[in-house]
Image (cartoon, rainbow, N blue to C red):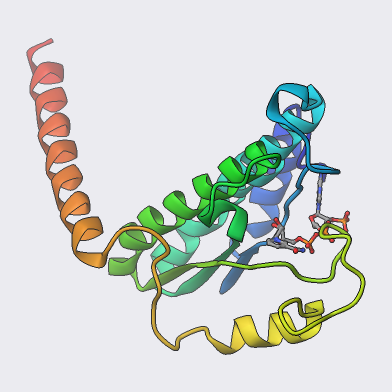
Length: 197
Ligand SMILES: NC(=O)c1ccc[n+]([C@@H]2O[C@H](COP(=O)([O-])OP(=O)(O)OC[C@H]3O[C@@H](n4cnc5c(N)ncnc54)[C@H](OP(=O)(O)O)[C@@H]3O)[C@@H](O)[C@H]2O)c1
């Protein structure tokens, strides 16, 4: 499916149908696009800007929204999302890509705290350059691996402990409890009002 398209609800519906009933243990949110070359935000081609957000953010959210409920009900699963140094360090001339990866970082950390009680692990892979089509770097070097060793190293760290990219565990958990409380009160209020009417 084309993740750049916003007119692809039928594709997501097909995906949901294929996933339904399958024991999906691992979801890897790898799909991503960056700017074709570094570009000032004010000169960014509108379609490139929209594609980056649709692919990196909308696509990842919609696929996870389809796959995660099954993992919750089976009480096991792993959701890995490709982050980027560009999302960790604000990156001029890649502003839209940088923002999209920062979005994924906050989202992934928040989702991890939500799904932990259901025994579903959610992690973000905070990657620097890798020799792929996206980076346009051809030769591996000390700091820039080729995809195979990168993937081997990244997968080798699964289960070796958590590193939450943003926010300490304490503050994320305080935030979680606070919003569970606000939600429960709002639901009780809505139920009272529904009863009155
Ligand atoms: N390479 C790096 O230096 C680097 C650094 C940090 C983070 N990352 C992240 O790592 C992930 C993988 O990137 P990569 O380096 O392997 O780049 P890549 O070689 O350009 O691969 C991107 C992947 O996304 C898919 N994709 C892109 N646009 C799509 C669309 N509109 N619809 C469906 N699929 C689409 C591609 O599918 P096709 O192969 O079918 O085109 C490919 O599988 C991305 O999330 C990227 O942001 C990469």
